[in-house]
Length: 115
Length: 113
Image (cartoon, each protein chain N blue to C red):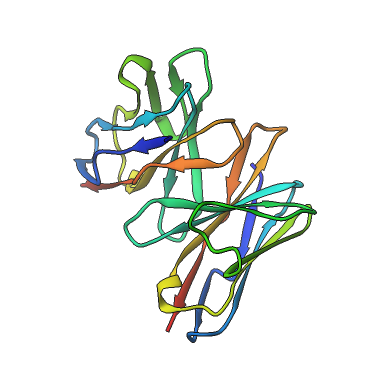
């Protein structure tokens, strides 16, 4: 099946710094990608829909100025957590759907720890 | 509001025993339904999906799920569990086959030898 990668897999940063997470579709093009967040022992919650060449669509309650999303190409979406705080510590997962296969593929996730 | 519920947070079974993981959905129309498995350090892997048609869906790794409209359920089953099946399982629903998903809370499966 198709592969979606994320980088980095794990990141530790100081409070107040910004962190960029990349999501790549390795062998297919994705005009849309989704970003989810998973807190410990909780389910995945959709944060935003990343759209290639246009603005991202954020779910209710997600601060767009804090979680900047850029979908600059058909294979890359980035999520930047700006001025990160300890409460932003979480597991961030992206997914990329393929309309041709009528399914979507998930990245392995990025674990963010903000000290 | 659309929702997916997994009533069981943690299930423990013995290796070789049968397994059923419960999933209930609440949608205005019949959603697309999925079961994913997440192992530590791994991404979500799709086990099976239901769109329409035959209500008994076969998936990978010997899993199957049955869609029951009358009960708003989409339970995952496996007749004989292997130790390698220990993982966290997520039921999810969506309005399309490849759009954004609403996930259930997840069920952690522990397999005893």
